[in-house]
Every structure is written in C-alpha cells, then in structure tokens.
View 1 (cartoon, rainbow, N blue to C red):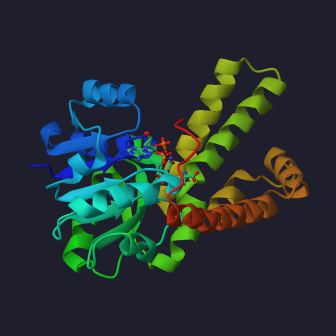
View 2: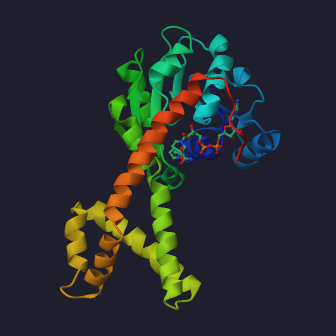
View 3: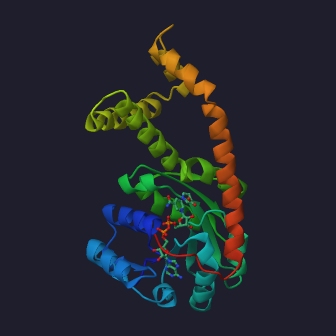
Length: 278
Ligand SMILES: NC(=O)C1=CN([C@@H]2O[C@H](COP(=O)(O)OP(=O)(O)OC[C@H]3O[C@@H](n4cnc5c(N)ncnc54)[C@H](O)[C@@H]3O)[C@@H](O)[C@H]2O)C=CC1
Ligand SMILES: O=C(O)[C@@H]1CCC=N1
C-alpha cells in the first residue's frame, strides 16, 4: 500500500520524502510523480522509490498525498486527483500562498487538507515547517503531518492567516542567508583573501553564530553587543550597514515576499501551467 504519494517531486518534494527515508521509511511506501520522465528516472535511481507518470495513478489508494508543485500548477493537479481521491486520504499542500479553502473547493466535499510551509534546510534535518489545518481536518490528522515533518526538523502549528508571513521568513529565509554568505565571501575576496579562505570563514561564521543563537537562547541584539567592542571594528562595519539601511531592506523584502505569496494564490485558481521546470 502507498503510505505517501508525492505529486511533483522537484526540489521541495524530494527534500521532504528523502528526509522520511533517512528517518526509516521504506522506499516501497512512497510513490512520486514529476512532469519529466528523466526526473522520475533520476528519483527512482537515487532513492529506490516507485514513480508514476500519472498523478491519478499515484494518488489512488494513498494514505497521504503531498502536493509539491508550484502554485501555478496546483489547479491542474487538484482537478486530476479529485476524481480518484478516497475520503480517507489526507492531502498536504506545500504550495506558497494557496489557502486550504481554495484547495478544498477543488476536491470532493469534506476532503482533509493541511497546508504546510517547509524550507530547504530540511535536506539536513534542520528544517522549519509550519502547518495549518483545513476545515475538515481532525486533530489526529494534524498530528500525523506534524510527526511526518518532524523527521526533517522543527514543526510549528500556526493559524492559517500567518502562512504568507511565515513564507516570507522561514520559507524564503534560507535564500536571504545564502545571499548574505555570498556577500561576505565577496567582501573577503575584495579585501584580498583567497576565495577558498573567504568561503571557509563566512560559512563557519554563519554556522557557529546560528548555533550560538539556538543553544544560548540569547536575543540576537545581546549577542551582537558582545561582538561589538567600543570604538572597534564591528561598530565601524555596523555603522555602514545601518547607513545602507539593512533593517529597512529586510522589512521591505519580507513585505514583498508576503505580498508575492498572496498573489501566487491567484495562479492556483486557474488551470494554467507554469512556464517550465527548473
Ligand atoms: N523551494 C523551496 O525552498 C520551497 C518551495 N515551496 C513550495 O513547494 C512547491 C514546489 O517548489 P519547488 O520544489 O521549489 O519547485 P520545483 O520546480 O523544483 O518542483 C516542482 C515539480 O513539480 C513538477 N510538476 C509540475 N506540474 C506537474 C504536474 N502536473 N504533475 C506532476 N508533476 C508536476 C515539476 O516537474 C517539478 O518537478 C511550490 O509550491 C513552492 O511554493 C515551499 C517552501 C520552500
Ligand atoms: O520562492 C518561492 O516561491 C518558494 C516559497 C518559499 C521558498 N521558495
């Protein structure tokens, strides 16, 4: 029997199901779909999971269906799976922006839906995933999804009204930090450090700082003050970052991500198809 059908196993779909395999799930419990045959072959070879070319075939008889297509492709997928969805099947959507009520409206009446916002740090079991229940989802089903996702990191249950803001912080967040690391590396190279040295310094500094934040539980401003000696180098650098309005940039950037998340919901109401795969 299929425990989990992953519909649209791109970056995020593979991230979630490969975490379950690391946590001890059997590959035979999982069936995955993707638009391109080469991608399906790659996933079967890499993980030993079953693949299906047709979404309806993958979903038939599955306990849980994890939909990991882009919001623009969600409408088409929901229309394909709705006729074969059993009333017991739990539907989990990873799509940014798309409300559970929009998903429920395209599925048979009473379908149990959970909306999840994960992030790619789940690839190393340090993910942050939030989940919100739909109108017909029991507490046990929410617990079931929380347990599934906790295989790859932390899980929080949030009111659905917060999911667009969550997307702007933890969903997109890894990309902001990677951009910061890229910028630190370029800064080091600009100062004459060999690229390899600059990369080692930047990566370990971000990793160690994240660990310090998490393990001490201290507020970031307290940790920042400990680095900032009076009249010293850090104060000089932070002055420049403040001059360049780093905080204002983050406020504007997270607002833009939140707004884009809301806009993406419109794509899921149609049956249009996204321009193409990565
Ligand atoms: N990449 C990320 O960091 C995160 C992504 N998400 C959400 O996860 C979803 C997927 O995003 P990515 O993995 O980044 O995209 P992706 O483009 O890597 O993966 C999407 C996959 O869906 C497949 N697909 C498209 N239409 C299909 C169809 N009709 N039937 C079967 N497969 C189909 C594509 O072939 C592709 O493999 C999106 O809804 C996004 O909002 C959520 C949190 C983080
Ligand atoms: O960029 C995106 O739309 C997706 C959602 C959160 C992270 N990646």
